[in-house]
Image (cartoon, rainbow, N blue to C red):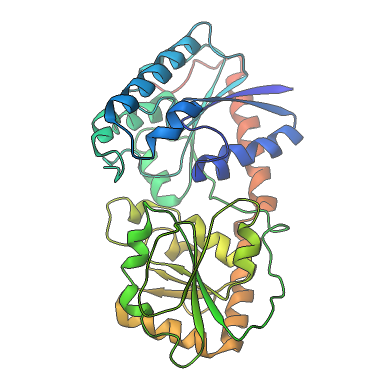
Length: 370
C-alpha cells in the first residue's frame, strides 16, 4: 500500500469541508491501494472549547499545546509516499511547519476549499483572526507539487503562484443521496441546512418567507441550529446528524440557499446546493459563487437576487407541484453527471497517482520554487 500522510486542521468527522473532502476521499483511495493516515492539528480538548464560549486564556493554552504537539511531526516526519495538506497544517501561525516538512522524494498535494488567503473574522473567536496568517496560503501554493481547488475561481487564483492545479468539486454518493417517495401530509416543505455561524444568511430572506403559507400550507424545516425564529411561516427544527441528514432532506420539497454580502461568498463552493439537488429538490439560491456554475436558472432551480425575486420564485414552486417535480429531476441529473463520487473519485485517485509518478522520475529536480 502507498501511504498518504494527511495533515488536517480539525478532529475527524466534524468539520464539513474536511469531512466531505479528504475524509471521504480516503475511502476511495484505500480501495485503489492508498492508505491515508490522518494527523489532525486539533485534539478533542481544543475542539470542545474553540468553537464555543470559553475564556480566551483557555483557548490560547490549548492552541499552544496543539501547536507544540504538531512540532513533534517535524523530525523525522510522518512515514508516507505523499504528504497531503488540507487548508493548513496548523490553525495558527505562518507556514513554518509546512515548510519544514518538505522532504526529498515526497511530493506535497495541497487542497483548499475556501478563500483562506482572505482575512476572516470568526463570529465566535474574533481575536483568533490575528493568529491565522491568511497570506501563508501563497507560500503553501508555491511549496506544493500539486494543488487541488474546489472550483474554477480558486483554481485561477492558485495558478498565479503554481501552474499545477486541478479542480475537484465537493460531491456526494448518489447511491446514498437520492430521491425517495415521501408521505403527502398536505405540506410543502422548504429546507435550509446551516449552523449558528451561518444563520444570518437565512435571516436575510426572512421578509421573503413571511406569509408564504397563506395559499398553500408551507413549512420551513431548519436542519442545524435549534434556537432560530423566523416569523410569519411555520418552522420545524431538526438536529443535524450524518445519520439522519439524507432522510431529513428527502422529506422536503424545495432547497434554500440565501447568502449575505461577505468577502468569502463570491469564491465559495456551496455544498448544500449539491446535497439538495442530489435528493431531487429544486433549489432557490442567490446568484453567487458556485451556485451560478451548478444551477441553470429555470431548469434545475432558480437564481435570485432581490427579495421580490425570492418571493416570486418560491411562490411559483410552492403552487406548482409539476414544476417542482420537473426541476427536481433536472437537479438530480446535474449532480449524477457532474458532482457524484462515482464521477469525481476516479479523478482524485488519478491525481495522487500522477503526482507520485512525476516525483519518482529520475530527472525530477524537486517541488515548486518557494
